[in-house]
Every structure is written in structure tokens, then in C-alpha cells.
Image 1 (cartoon, rainbow, N blue to C red):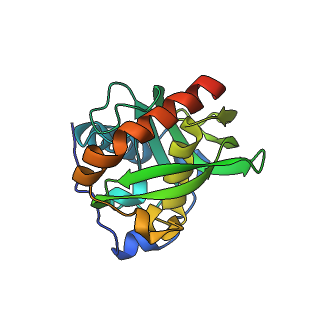
Image 2: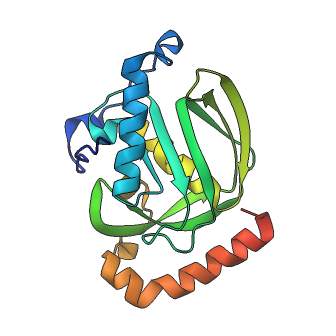
Length: 191
């Protein structure tokens, strides 16, 4: 198990768009090692996802997974998903307000508008191209991680700075209402 340090907001690697991964390299030991390090680091930090540039790898790949995550008890499950060279297409203009946090932005949360219906294309861990439609609350996780690869962190997308709060304040004053909104959204969309 290799748990890497997570770079913090303002680090040049986080602020620079990541480079595409050569598909011919995906099954090689270097890229496979990056994937393993991403999974180990995400799980160690109780993240719902993590992008390669968050651990200092300036290439376009991320992983996402939600099981019983203590940081995000309201998130619906997402099976372990490896996405290399992701492209997201919005399938509708319908959005929702998501309250987000990030491993690279410790102890800060804020409201971000995210699309409810996306198409995600890329390569999986085995170098196989895939296309997947993701709807509902889970779509936000994939948009958040793909943003990282473009040098965009969630604070850059917060429309109203008055929504910024610490994790403690969120848990005390906002999480119950937000979790109910998520349950309603999951009930409508199934994820």
C-alpha cells in the first residue's frame, strides 16, 4: 500500500491542466502504479474520489468510490471506478446545488452548481475505452474529479462565497438539511 501526500490548494501542479495519458501506456507498470497509489490514498483519506494531480502526477486520470464513507454518509454508493483521459458531456441543462469538500482544500466546504445528467467517456484501468451515462447526485463526484484535471478546484466554482464553511460548521448546522436534499435527489434519480 502506498499512500501519497495530497497537494493543497495553490500548489502549481493542482492549478495546471493535466496531460493526457498515452493509451498505449495504460497497462504498463508506471500507470498501473499510479492507479494503485490513487486508490490507496483515496481510501486512506476517506475520499469519494481523487485525481492524479492531487498526488503530484500531472496526468489525466482519477478514481472514484463511495462505500460507507464517514466523510460523506449521505452519498449513494459508487463502485470503484478508474477513469483515464475523461471527457464529460452535459446531457441536459438541469443542475442542482451541491455542497462540496475536497482533500486538497482541508476543512472547507461550499456550494457548487453541478449538472444532473452527464456522459463520461475515457479508458478504464485495463485500457478499454468506455462510455457511461451518470445521472443524479453521483454525477457531481465525477464532475468534481474531472475539474481537478483542468486545474479547477471546487472553491473556483462556488457562486456565493457566503456558503463557505468549515466541516465542523457544516456537520453542526447544514448537514442534516443537505442530507435530506440528497435523499430526495437520489429518490428521484436512483443515484
